[in-house]
Length: 137
Ligand SMILES: CC[C@@H](C(=O)O)C(=O)SCCNC(=O)CCNC(=O)[C@H](O)C(C)(C)COP(=O)(O)OP(=O)(O)OC[C@H]1O[C@@H](n2cnc3c(N)ncnc32)[C@H](O)[C@@H]1OP(=O)(O)O
Ligand SMILES: [Co+2]
Image (tube, rainbow, N blue to C red; front, side, top):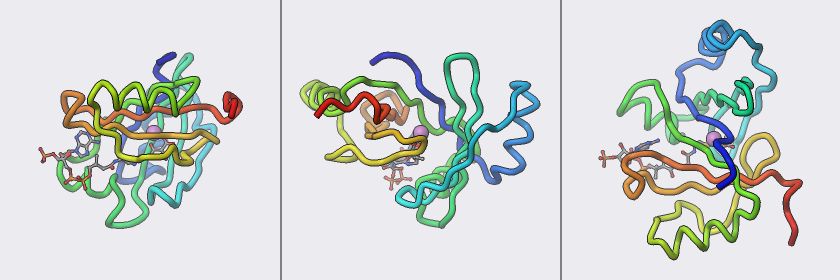
């Protein structure tokens, strides 16, 4: 794992939360993107070397809608940057972690992503993400 790439925050409204985080971090939302496969709209703000990813559900069966219904708005996941996502997925599987997708899938910001079940990580949903530029195979 290289570094924390982003922290994902589940919000009811990207528009409203975007304004709050722009004030908090004193920097503008630099990108918004819909990720249809996850049923979310995302908005990104840079915070030093890391990013904050705001996530709004686009449907009731979105993981974000389910999370907010249970726990309310708040920190949803921590994403770690990896150089070789497939190798890291194999390593985590061999360590007994439960992966939520068998193959890397496309996330926001041109990244390949994989999620690790929160039950095995002390209640924290973990995302692995690899910049597409790092793909070697
Ligand atoms: C935009 C793309 C990408 C990026 O590029 O950055 C993203 O970040 S997408 C983010 C949204 N996508 C995901 O979260 C995908 C992975 N998540 C899942 O597969 C599911 O949400 C889940 C984690 C497997 C939970 O789904 P499910 O089992 O259907 O929901 P439940 O509500 O029944 O939860 C079971 C259990 O897990 C706890 N839970 C759920 N979400 C979280 C969470 N984010 N952090 C911590 N714990 C979580 C939930 O509370 C339940 O616990 P118990 O009640 O104790 O059983
Ligand atoms: Co994320």
